[in-house]
Image (cartoon, rainbow over the protein chains, first blue to last red):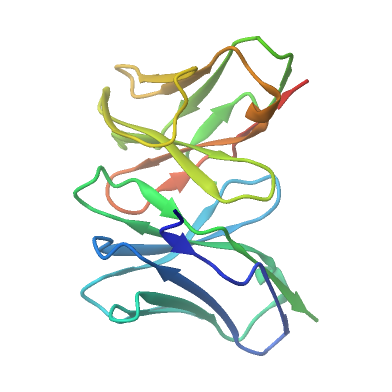
Amino acid sequence: DQQVKQNSPSLSVQEGRISILNCDYTNSMFDYFLWYKKYPAEGPTFLISISSIKDKNEDGRFTVFLNKSAKHLSLHIVPSQPGDSAVYFCAAVTNNAGNMLTFGGGTRLMVKP
Amino acid sequence: DSGVTQTPKHLITATGQRVTLRCSPRSGDLSVYWYQQSLDQGLQFLIQYYNGEERAKGNILERFSAQQFPDLHSELNLSSLELGDSALYFCASSQDNEQFFGPGTRLTVL
């Protein structure tokens, strides 16, 4: 039973355009959400997070949107750059469960010059 | 550089063997987490330690065990290895919700 799903295994966008990565979850107990970026042969790198009491969090080119009623979050990258090409994982946390992260399966983003 | 270190970087061993993976958390982080990433799959949570005590357990096999030492470094022990245990094993540490990951140990079981 996958509690966090990223339904698009891959996404290709042109440099300078917006990248939108989507994530859906089923567990209503999740109260904190994170996005990680992963390059091959490296560990995931924390990008941005959002608490369930917010619906938007912005950090430079990265914005995360949370729609609690739809149990959906998205990561917007604008403008996209070739260096953004990586696998992006969304993750969710239930704070009363030891802070363990439940990860989605990842979306491979390819930004073409 | 996340500040989390893992050794070794690569490990090749045979079925039935036992290996130990090591993780040093970021300075000041009390929580250590272990994750497994099999080929082309997402990261699966294995186990969490907080200040030396087991805090949460995920999909960790009985053949696997972990511990966190007084200096807060952690070891993941994998025994009776099977071909299917070949994967990337990541350690992460945190002070709060954001977890910071090490570079991983790639385990290959032949």
